[in-house]
Length: 456
Ligand SMILES: [Zn+2]
Image 1: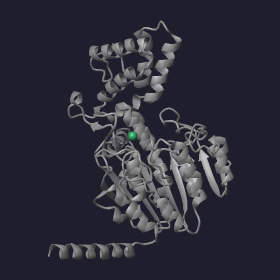
Image 2: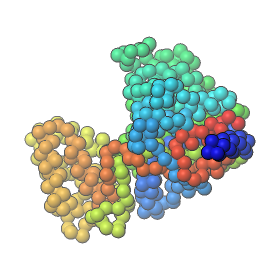
Image 3: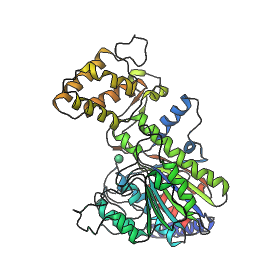
Image 4: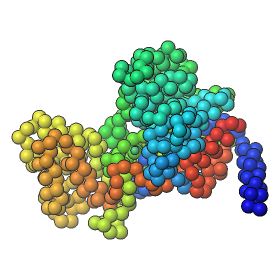
């Protein structure tokens, strides 16, 4: 009886998936945006920040379909970016650190390859390095995300049409076991035109296969540190221009540095990266408005990072997102400023670095009690003791961590981790077939749904 029931249920599921595939319309153009480390708290603080400055909602928060997506990997409730990107790209759970392969190391097929097979052109864009876990899961197969040279070889062999954003890490790693030469030379030999930096970027037009990077081997700079120059939206817009063709395209765009600054518990820099990501989505949205019956846009995150909370014991029921606008540099840049200052001023005392702290976070030493950014005696002492430790050990992390925690708390923001968490993420969708992304589902369902769409 039980077996018969299972048989009937399987029959029903098979029939409904056929029905599901039949009901899909053809989406000529498919965009997948992934905010690395971006869950509900990250999206909400960016939105509250925009609103506090008189702005509108985040575009990604205002799309008609808003859903919940679970993120666990095959071997942990808390996923890393490799396993979650593999789930989102290929539709199967794998272990943390695995890229485009299942838990036993067998290669999986990503949505990007399904798109290519369908005749669409393929673009892979990221604000971190092109060989980082999230973009890699769409073109590479490796059971170690750290093998970035080997991953880059897969990039060259993918035959995809457009790679853009951050550079290719380890592109000339002569110590790599399978070293065959600089990746950029190999890419040129395989028919790619390579463009490095802003001046080169202006020259892109009409080439068949393109690699366009902000710099050769690293991530793009944080928006808070460098507001001019090439941004994620520029690479997305250029991708649309290059990939548009009668058979359509699939484009994956990652906002990769959202995650990095959540690891550092730096909320203001995180917000800057989310706004940059939102602007890149805006490029796809503008395109979709011109091609309303042919375009699908899906936006998701791969996991939450940092255990970000909107609310803090010290501010009770109040959140002050507008105070975050006072931060003028990223965690990384602050650390470097302090390190450089101490290096060139070996006799420096705490009073000497106060101006750097005040300028970076608008925190105020010795201010009156009603000044919201006033540093209390306890907070000043914490910073001072971190500085004294820095003088003995040139690592400026402790001082940067203290300054940021104090600054974030004044905005009502707190964090519980420097790693990822098991919190689900939000998935948003717009356009043709977007309703199949409704409800609560697993991250593998994103790939399954996208593959069904791309097979049309
Ligand atoms: Zn991470």
